[in-house]
Image (cartoon, rainbow, N blue to C red; front, side, top):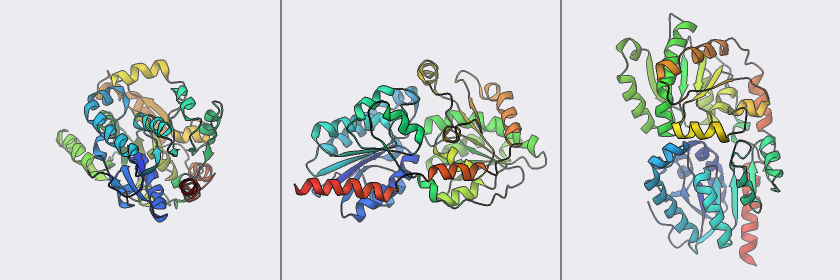
Length: 384
């Protein structure tokens, strides 16, 4: 990965695919203002002009156990970003989600006296609310009212911004016969745990929904995950493997929504993908299988009653949420409860859900307005 070089730049840090989606337009607006950008970001941010300083493939991890397993690599990447932030050529820092890195980098930016902006800051309403105290002097951009309310309780002044999905054209749902979509997540270790539980459930549920068809499609967030999922499918019994295919999810938002709309049901890992599937009007069960350490600590520390974003946004339980305990084998822990949830899901009327969710996502400033204001203050500070 290249060093920042001698030209002034804005440092960005996004550590997973959902952050890469958000960061794409932020990088593009910064480049349009005549400033260079570098840091951590995936294919979308790099396509908008970001110069990568670290390998994005290292970064998407979740849970205490997964972080510990990648500790050495992550520490090296964090030091690379710290070094860039300390460079005299670094004018400002933009953090996007990914609090494991970004909370540390925001604190460093404050000590250095460099402007910082945090888009999609930590989920303090669920756990670790003390993080809010460290962000009181940092501009925060959040997507939902419940996020803004949580931060205001700690003296922060978050601003509401429109979600990138707010302007997406909603597809006309044309479900393919019996197809069940699996979106096991973009973080490698998390997706590897989820996919086995998802597959067992989907193969059972697809037959019960449409015994004549029974197709299952795994949508991988990127090509490297497609390779991993394909290998897992190859190891299935032949009668099951022939019913499963693996695709890479389309890069464009509207293309993804159109692809989702062909399914009769989706099993989805918590995250931005749950919002996309809800906008496609597809019945969904939100499910995850955490690592053992995260599961144990989460039972003690997590305070929220929901973890599916559409349920949080709408303020009601539209989609069923299931956590598969890590100690359970896929065939046991993911069996009866998940299949029953899938059968209930396909019976629900999803017609009004997409419009309701998109209406909520459309509130607030646009990304363009947000970045113009932030960069305007940056330029103003440089001239004084």
